[in-house]
Image (cartoon, rainbow, N blue to C red; front, side):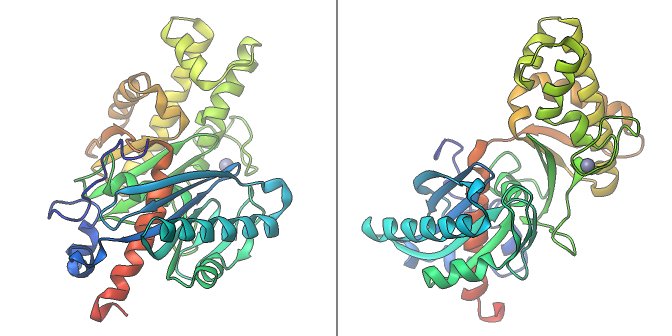
Length: 348
Ligand SMILES: [Zn+2]
C-alpha cells in the first residue's frame, strides 16, 4: 500500500489537506515549506494488538520505508513497551543508514490515550495502565515525540491525506473487530477531555441486543462490527464464516446472510444518524475490515441513513483510501505537528 494512496504533497498546496488545520491557525508553513527538510524523516509506529506497522515518513508525507513486527502482547505490557522502544530505535537507525535524519517520532496505540500528557492510560489488548509512552520514546531516541490513539491517528490520516482530503469536517468510522470513530475538524482529531472520545461502538442501538465486551447490551459494536457480523450469522445458520463471506452470501441472495447484513446496515445507520445529529459532518469515511465490502456497504448504508435523517444534512459516505497504513501515517502526522509547534516562534 505504500505510496499507493498518493499522500505525496500534503502540505505544499493551500487547499485543505495535511497541513490545512495548522495553516488556518497560522502555525504552519514555516518549517514544512522550507527546503531545509529535504533529508528529514519522522519515525512512525502504529501498535496494534497483534502487530506493529512502522514507517519512515518525509515532511511532505512521502513514505520512504515500511516494516512490520509482531506486538507479542501475550508477553505482557513491560515487554511490549521494550519492543516498541527497540523498534523505534531501529527505525531511527535505518533512517541514518539511508542518509536521512530522523527528527521526531509518532506513536499510535489502542485504548484510552491522553495525547496531552502522552500517557497510554488504558488498553485491554496491550495491558497498558498509565504508561508514559511519549516520554519513553522521546528519551530513547533523543527526539521530540507524540502519542496518539490508533483510530484518531487513522482518522487524521484519512482526513488529511486520504478519502477525506479537502473536507474540513470528517467522521472516520473504523469497523473491524470493534467499532470506533474519530471526529476530525480542520485536520485535528478531538480526543475528548479524558482521551476517550469517539467510542461510537458503545452507543446502544439495540437495547435487547447481544451483550457487548464493555458489559452493556446492544452496543453498536456488539451488533455491527465485523466480528459481530460473523458471530450473528453463525448463530443463525450454524456455519462459522467471516463477515466478508456473509457479505458475499448476502449479495448472492442467501436468506440468512441477507438478513444478518440488513440488520447490520440498519444498526450502522442508527449509529451514524446519532453521530450526524451530534457532529454535523460533511463526510463519513468508512474504514476497517468491514469497509472492504465497498459498495455492498456504502450503497445500502447511504439509503438507510437518508431514511433516518430529518432536518440534518446528509453526509457523504466514503470508503477509506489508506488501508491499514492509515494509523502509521497518522502517527507520522502527529510527529510532524510536533515539529510545527517547535518551529513556530509563538508555538512554544
Ligand atoms: Zn459496548
